[in-house]
Image (cartoon, rainbow, N blue to C red):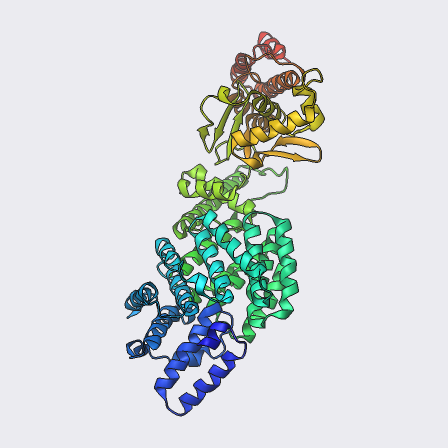
Length: 614
């Protein structure tokens, strides 16, 4: 057991040899004990499965009734872990619940069990709970139980424990605690130069960087994996390579991702990794195929995984299959730009195809929500956003979808879309109003610092951003501030603090602007409506002139005039279209609404007087 816990490279071969010797001698009792050790070695890292079939055949659960406490606890751990190694066994099979109860009692009460072994047993229990009942509260319970244990364990097991803790805490939505666990792992690895820990650290770093959308950090971690790769056992390489594939998928490098998954699967075959434990790699290969536009092949790959997946993993797989079907259906609707139906029959077919694709997407939403997978389609955020938008529009699983979009900070498929869980909404048409997560920010905006609010209004009126010099000229004329750049920096800092969304304001390449992936701006939505010729939408957004009631000059005064002119031009154009269609009454009503919204629009007034003639 000591050699197993130390991770000795040659242990597995030795265990296989003595196991076969015991089997040949007909020593079933010894074979069962050796099989338990071989199975526990497999459960340690799910990397090397050679000899697994012989071990499963030799293990006797009656070992749990042995007079030796070590044999009993190891047998209980194998009973819990066996369904993860052989899908012929279920998580609800005979004796499993009792084995879990006994093993938990050992972790809680038996201080005589060596620390490294206690962490191994806790890992098996956590893996069982994750893949079986998937009880988040039980995860936290076991993690808390091990808090006094890990400081006594070896560096190898401490690092492994913090890696597992970070994954479990992240899954439970305890992001601060997950980051703290990852930091503990980093500090341990920094004190040592063990290839296995270095690889583990780089793997964890890469995955966390991807969750934070920090691709530069992810690239650094991917390079560290390459540096450590020749120094570790081949069996430990696939997981780290899988993290690299996740980065390639995020970057849209699907061909390279497909090649890398082939390498992973070849190494896994050399170590007799069962198909069930290759699930994550097969899933990545399917996503690479999907990214290459080979959706049918991706679906065939996923469908072939079904027999090897059970419990919550099968539920998740069914959700992923539905997601890929939805992407295939939605992608088929993307017609070449400018294409219009040839006739009424073609238009009806298009409508039916859209309705069918929508139903496929909604089914994917329902299954994804049932699986509780908020990070679905992480390699394809644009498609995740499409599914979320369809679900929100239909009122299906709205709470789940809003949380998923907010947690991942996903921008909507249409940048001007108002009904979306934006971190921030900023209205400046008709007056300044700010909402964070759908709620008015700090009550009356007048309670906020004056200059940061002026800066916010200026940026909202110019969604494309402004040069820093233009912002300074607008807000800090030379006679008002001796150090305008310092004043700008202070206003930016205070604005970010007030908004409580550091990513809301971007400063890059000498320009300052609101982040269109984090902030919905009514001016941007108005301009999008005008570009699309949607006068009804434009009028709904135009609740009044820019910062109505305030005296403006400079850039803001110019923006107010420009937006009023854009609205008037959009309404006039839409009115002219209606008039040409013979709908003159509708055209006049539309122009009248436009004039009511912007009474100073002389062009609209003239159109009304002329009855929209010419």
